[in-house]
Amino acid sequence: MIYTKDFTVTSSKMDATSYLSVVGVFETVEECVTELYGELGIDGFTVAEKFNACWVFLKTRIEMIKPIEWKASYSASAFFSKKSVASMQIDVAIRNSDGDLCSYAKVEAVSLDLDTGKIRKVDTVGVGEDFEIHEPLSKLQFTRFPKNELPEIDTVKIKYTNIDYLQHTNNKEYPKFILNTYEVKDLIEKPIRELEIQYAGQAVEHDVLSICKDVIDDKEIFAIKRDGVVLIKCEIVR
Image 1 (cartoon, rainbow, N blue to C red):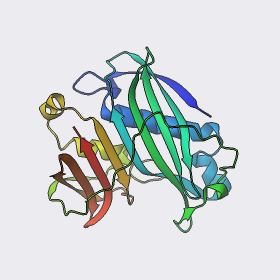
Image 2: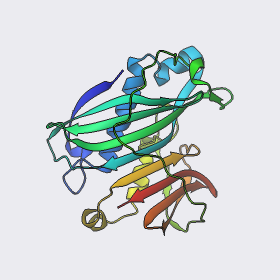
Image 3: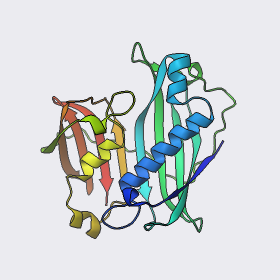
Image 4: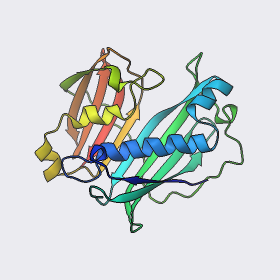
């Protein structure tokens, strides 16, 4: 199945450039992936009720290819591109009204048991052998992060508006935390071309997180930590 949804670049989805923002792309991707799961009857609410499990994203990488301006229409198409015993990969293609590919994303997700917190096999949470797997439209691949220790550059405290229905920090909040370490002029003069986030743990309300950063091989590498433990890794290419 390929799930397609139409959008408009509203004021909440753009940034200081007046184009669809990186956060706007993240929100579009998250929305399409969760609704694809919903169309297939394996969304978070259903999986929790039927199988005592939940879906979590392990990795998300996006590529910003072509800008989409304010008030312009665009569409996003989500589909499964890979299935393994314990994980699913979902690709999302974002196109403008002319059909041009403007952004592309790859997401890897796993299902966790709500009692044990352990990863479940996908066939135990409603993913059958008949699920359609489609060829990716991009060669976008996940990165391997260096193990360098990164210096702290900022801190953030998790509050009510950061929390999702599972009472963890919503995935889309982490790009905001990271992007808020830049100045506006930096991202206007040298915009983001690719961004990847890998999730190693969950933050909850009242947590105080450290944001750490270094530049390695011309890539901006971030880590978000709680009490010295890495929860989030991020790579930005500009």
